[in-house]
Image (cartoon, rainbow, N blue to C red; front, side):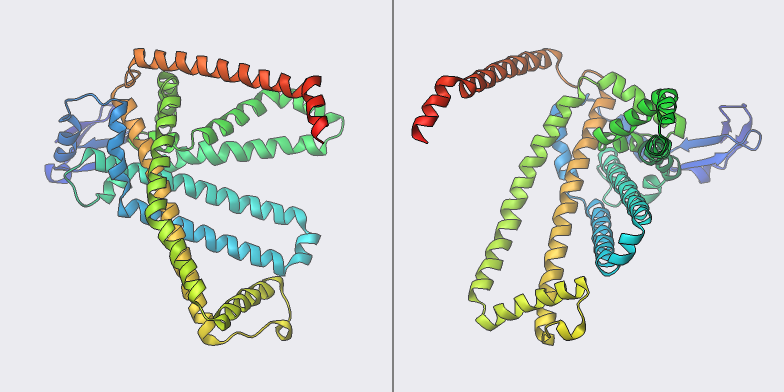
Amino acid sequence: MEISCTECGKQHNIPDTAIDNKKIFFYCNSCGHKIIVDNRKNFVKQQSSRKDIPVIGDILSGIPLAFNFNSILISSIYAILFIMTSLLCSITVFRSSSFVANHPRAVIIIFITIALVFYYLYILVLYFISKISYFKMLNPGYKRLDWKFINFDIAEDSLVLFIIYIFSMTVFTILILPVVYLSKGGIIYTGIMFTLFYGLFFVSLFSLSFMNFIPAIVASKSQFVIESISEIIEFFKKEFLNIPVYIIIVKILTSLVYGIVTLFLTIPLLMTSGILFILMHSKSKTALFEFFTRIYDRIIGKSPDQITTVSADVTLGTILIIIFLMVFCVLIWALFVTISQTLYTKAVFIMQKNPEHSINRTVYLVILIVLTVLIYISSSKIYALYELLSSEMFNDFISEFM
């Protein structure tokens, strides 16, 4: 197959077997431009076979996609790493209180760095969930994931997410620090840099506000860094009216699923824990409290002779309970994150396939009018209640009963 470079036009001869039902990329020998070739027959067939234009009601089909082993596993691994790192940092702070007191700036820098790393990892978790969701939506007949498809754009996409979420926040923090240390000159510095401060702060606030949408947009297409950033801007320009509605819909659906999961998983757990604790022997209850007291004493750094000894069977039994509870909480959290991000991904998919018209404009206008009326009525009622509570007649009435 002859493939032309879109930049310089040079022809490249690629064997048919190398691109048969595959998605590949290579660099032009003449100009170094990255050329992407997508020749996946099944993928293209699934992508183009859908005749119906998706609308907002199709977001319900995103709920079954959320119950995906790979997405939950990725979220669970992140949660375990976060918990272990948090415990390690907490123990280090308790045991090194003198170092923390003597080097507060170093401790702050270390904690900010760790927080940024985990913040970026969380964004990548959302990205991978979106990537997996897109593969499931475009290839419903595939039971196994194509990890080549999932990881195809990881280099460019991870850089885009780093620029949006980490680079802008880091640059803003570095540039704003002189304002703290400069005295009167800080006003001049602020006046010169104010526009740049505003831009960086806006990007940081924007990325935080749409934390779920941006990774889904980046994961939706195979693009270079500049193209992905332009795609994000164009998406929000087109869909800025629809995005709030989708956010409300996703929040309602996730709350509904959270409630069902809590009903069928958390309540039996609480009942089991309560029944076992009630039936437990009094000596077992005492030993359980002694175990947690021992853990606390070790964390705060008490000497070994001051720590209560606990038998091996009590330690083993309590550790097994703690491990089960930790795994349970991690899986529940991972499921919630996966459900939420999958629904946001489905929302982005609908809006991209049906730009600006995925929500009926008449219904949208009616909803806006109803909300405006409700807000006006609520505000007037609240103001009337405020006037009543602040009136002298109400105060005199209250004073008679005091």
